[in-house]
Length: 381
Image (tube, rainbow, N blue to C red; front, side, top):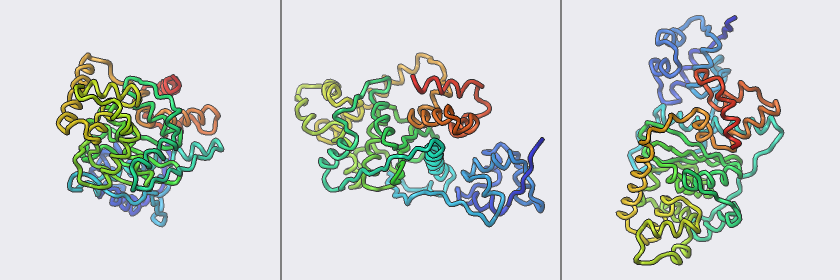
């Protein structure tokens, strides 16, 4: 039996406008409804809609479906004030893509808090506080906060990135990876909250190894109580003083200046120097190379050439015709292991249903039936 519910055309149009002046045609395309259906529901004198259709629209608008049933209710997402540091003219703040990527991050945070609540658990307070005027001291504060001197960082296929990401996640810092074709002019952004702050890595065109510097840079912003939509972090030549400060702190956490000095020899190639530092710093090669540039040990051109060389090696490996990445792998990469493990744990303890777990993890009906089981098995490997 099909369930029908009332909807409010006024409410739907309100959220269409708030999320980037979404047109009826765009709403139809993104929701999977026909354009005729959308035009009808926006102008219907007797507004009745299938519940499934209302939920499809709600997902596109990032609004709980109940807020589309009554014009007197208003949903206001908890999005902090964001400073834009992008190295481009800002033309995307009013676009659907920009608003959606922010709301997707907020939804992930809300889902994580909800799952913790169902299990009777409290998230950790985020009490990292940096001064913003002493890069070396702030780097030490970060090191102490995560107890980095005693953390085991195992190298994996992505050159230490996963290990550092897990260290962040263990402190209830969400690290979300988002692929997008939109030209955001950014490697990532962060949203500060006193519990469960969020870092989003915009991973399209950014090798996993480079993401280590990105998440560390965003962490510095969070330690300064900032919510920032960053520019291209690895474009070291920015004149923005705050960006340069965050780069300096991030680099010093990854590979302190005294370590670089002890490893440096003038007759070394960039690769030799990076590998020597890497053996002690336990960080990715691109992140170390960026820090070497920041510290003045290699030139900007040497950095660019080295990163390009690493990218070419990566491309060559990917040309071997490897199989399509499974949905389970994409889900774990997107949300992170701690997030996914928390959802699976809640489902295992029957505090959330399997259907709720699928919804939180973005498992679509078109995915193969065993996707949830695949995620459950893989996330504990």
